[in-house]
Length: 340
Image 1 (cartoon, helix red, strand yellow):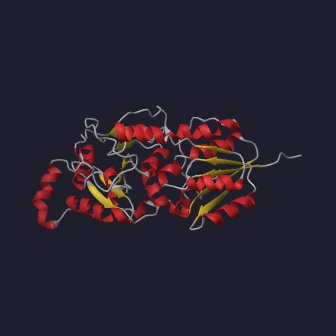
Image 2: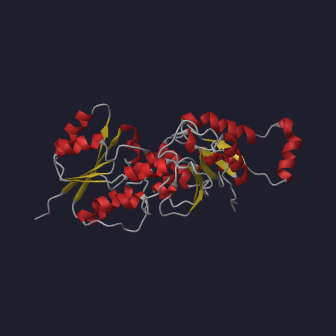
Image 3: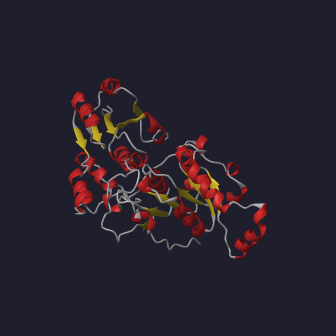
């Protein structure tokens, strides 16, 4: 007689990086609980992150109506909920489903103290390992592996989709960021690209395209500048830019990251996708801080941040512009890397 299947619902509505950071919970539940069926509820915009994940049986999406989502979830008759978002919406879902649930501790008090008084009481523990604490009562432990990201075959980027200059080897630079204070100023992005001194693919959304064009224009070779270009060649300048911002979907951008030599990134979702593929990550931090526990997980990484100012972190997420007006957290970072 077969053992009854256990149905578990995982809740995490946003965003890209946060969802990628929950993938070890999904994998370990599936691997360590016999006859388990895992469902995942997220926003419709982020469904593509999870669609190819073999550990997930079904994805439920939140569109405009929370009531409709609750109705569909009730019909599934879940045995347990793992709430990795822990906000008002997930509270409503847990209350209305009325079943056992374990919820992630967001440490809002500790974050508030760190942002407002620069009193760092955050645990020295990555957020992934804190997510895993929610499944310990089910007898599930971390398996020692990192993050997962599964790319559908149709989204694997072929070499001939890229310019000839980038078909041999390239560095990926995720230039986007949800807030301006999480991104380098354009002149500093240009400085990073110049220092990389290799073919660079810029990644980001449609909203980052114009920034990518500005960076690409700086390195563009023009016939009228032949003597100048010869001088650059003599100096060993080899930066060539392909602005891919807005030209590929998220899974295709993940494929580009997977095949990159190394990855440069602000504090964004693509940074965590790079970690999932065990890439070396050069991680650039502005107004936020790695001490919040969201640095690259279980992969080689280098942190670039300015620890010589007292106003940082000024937010756990970010702002449209520097509250102090000087933006020293990004303007004064020293970049000292060399890419072999």
